Length: 582
Image 1: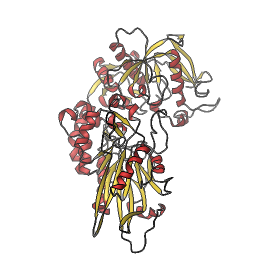
Image 2: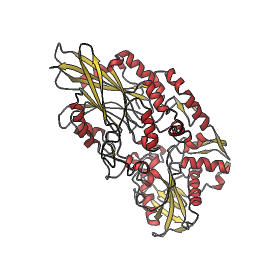
Image 3: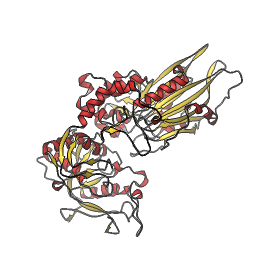
Image 4: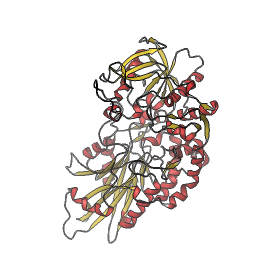
C-alpha cells in the first residue's frame, strides 16, 4: 500500500497527463473544480479498533475513520475554496464494525429513532452525494431506508431497480451547481452505480423486491440524461472494482466493471470507484467510442485514503469544457481527528465500547486463529461446534448426520484465557452472516472440498514449506477457504487442484457417494458467494435467520465456559504425497 502521496498542491501539475481535446486557448477563462472521494468506510468513524478495544494501528502506519477524513476535507476546502469542491462516497458505509452492528441489531435505529452514526458523521462533514454499496443491504431494506432518510446528501443507486415497477428504487443521479463569479455556473453530474452481486449476497433481503442491472448498460442509459441536463462534468461513483472480473458465476452482470464503464460509455470524465479496497491514486482508461481519456481512482478502505480529483474547466464558445484532469489519493494519517466529529460521535462510540466489552464466558485456555488457514485449530472448531449444536436443536426430528462448514475469517482473532467478551467473538466471526443448513451427498461433499482446496498453491516434492506462499492461490481470500467438520479428510498439496482430497471418511469408513448429510453453512456461501459447487441448488432444511456471531455469543453465555476438550477435533490436515505437512 502507498503510504506517501503527492502533496495536494502538486496535483494540478499532473493535468498534463490527461490528454484532452480541445486544448485551452490563451485568454480563455479557466476554473479548477476538485472532487474529493471516499469509499468502503465500513462504519469506521473514529480511529478505533473495537475488536482490540484500542486505537487502530497496522504495520503500514495507517489510521482509519471519518474523523480523520473530515480534517483532510476541511484542509482541502480551505486551500481550494469550499465553493469549488465536492465530496462523494462510493459505498459500503453502514456495515463493518461493531458500531454499525450495535445500531442495526442491539439498539436498532429503526426502532429507537436515534440517528445512525454514519448519517450523523457524514451530515456533519457535508457529503454532497453517497452511492450504495453491496453491504448497505446486509441489515435489510427497512434499516437502509431509515439511514437514507436521515442522510442530508442524496443516496444514489441507478441500477438498483424495483422488481415490480422496473423503475430505479433509489435516486439514480444528482447534478451539483457551482457558482463562478461573472460567468455561467458549472454543473457537475454524479451517477451512482452499485454492485449486481447484491442479488446473491443479500438474496434474503432483496429477492422479489429489487434487481440489479448491468453497470455498463445502466451508465449508457443515464449518462446522456445527465449530459442533456447541462452537466459540464460527469463523474460516476461506482461500487465495483476495475478488473472486469466477478467472484460469482456468469449469470449476473460483471461485478468489477468500473473500467468497463469508463471504456464503453461515452460522456464520462471520471470514475470514483470502490469495492476492491485498493489504493489507486490515478489511472487512465481510453474510451473506445470517443478516444478520450477517462480518469479512475479508488481511495482504499475504512477512511485510510481520500481521493482528490482535479478538473480544469475552460470557457470555450460559451460552454465549460474539461481541458485537463488528474487525481491522487491522500493518506489520512497525515492529519489529526476532527474534534467536532469525535465529540459528536462520542455517545454512540461509548455505547458500542460498553457492549463489546460485555463478558460472555470464560475460556479454559488461550485459543488463537493465527494458524487456521493451514491447520485445524480449536478456535475454528468452536464455530463448527456452535453451528452443529444450533442445527441439531432446531431439527429434533432429523436423523441424518450433521456436518458444518466454516472459513478462517481472521488470522488475528484470539480467545484469551479467562474472560471472553463480545469483542473476542466478534473478532473471530467478523461478518454478519446468518446460519442455514442444506442437504448434500457424499459425492457433492467431495466436490465441495476439492473446490475449497484450490486455496493452496501446489507444493513440489522436497520444496521448503513457505507459509507466505502456501495459501491464497490465485488471490483466493481466506474467507473463501472452507473447512468441514464431522468428516475426516486430507488435502494433498503436492497434487494439482481438483485432485487433492484423500481419505474422506465418516465415522472411520469411506463415505458412499449417495449418503446424505445435513450441512450447516452460512447464507453468503449458500447463496453463491465464492462460487462453491452444489450448495445454491441444494435442499434447504434450516433458515431461521439466526446470526452466527450472535448464536456463538448466546451459546457461550449459556455454557459459561469455552473448553476445547469438549469440542476440538483435528479432523483434517495438509499432506504432501500422503505425508503430513506439519
